[in-house]
Length: 319
Image (cartoon, rainbow, N blue to C red; front, top):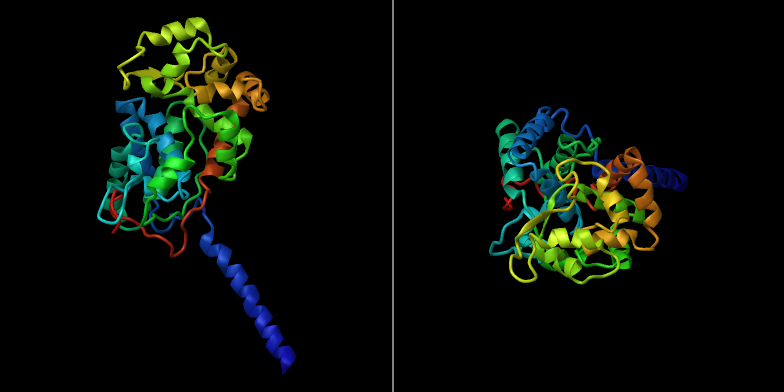
């Protein structure tokens, strides 16, 4: 009798262990039966937005990144202020800087028309980042799906866990390590700065401090659109050479001391990541492959799955 009970308990334990991962697992086929047109619908919305404004590609990749680094890839960054929520949009790394919210809202609206209440905003963010990369010449990758949306946001986490434009190499490595990402992942993901633009206030100190880690001619050129005072929101491309193409020129810039942000240049400043930057500057195929792998890895940060969270009807508000 005792052996029968033990066998039954063991069997139940095994079944329980088997059932837990299956609920929490993301899958590229998650919507194959519930919303087979979801990915095509999202791709159309993203391509339309980027065709109108090329810069939006960089903004959408960054939006997914800023979402995943705060409490995981749960679309918490999309939530507006409410009586119960203090929006992450107000955090210093996001305020008047992160863009593309309306593009995600539009994609969500299009998907809701064909499959109401099925596709999460968190998954739309992940797919949008992939489609944005590919549209401007970057790599594509298979997006794992099945994330659910957060019912809360965390302003304090956004302020403390997102990398800053003046961070040291050690700080950057630590921030990424805390999210399960390696130094190589960090360098590869930083390569998204091969597209997009930065505001004057984020690089003013760097171009005016006459330090040894910046090319003098490059600094002079950048000062034309970024005065010593004022013009904080003036924009400048992160990569002057090919600002609208996803390539490996970003890494070539770093080797020439032409990184726009201090947090860019520290990747090639005599530290532990110099060899990775050098490798990517010579091998664009390896960079793109590593970038895609790092984006997949980033998309796996603490997703809400199963019965956790919800599928928001509107990305900017809880149901």
